[in-house]
Length: 85
Image (cartoon, rainbow, N blue to C red; front, side, top):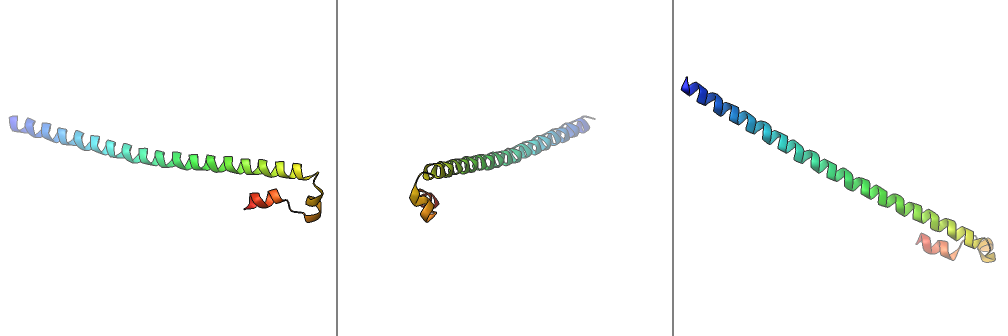
């Protein structure tokens, strides 16, 4: 009986250890995925902000060039060419 109890205690300990290690491994894996997704989201947000700023700059260029006669003749603005570069 004593040997049997010791055996079950050892088996129980190993089962709890395996479950704990598996849970820890899953947590670490999911945390890495979450970190990658957060970095991807941050990159998308920075790209969106850059696009919005570029659109605002283009609108400002066209508004300022409405009164410039050279813009109507050449159909290109020096500011717009610099922005494209």
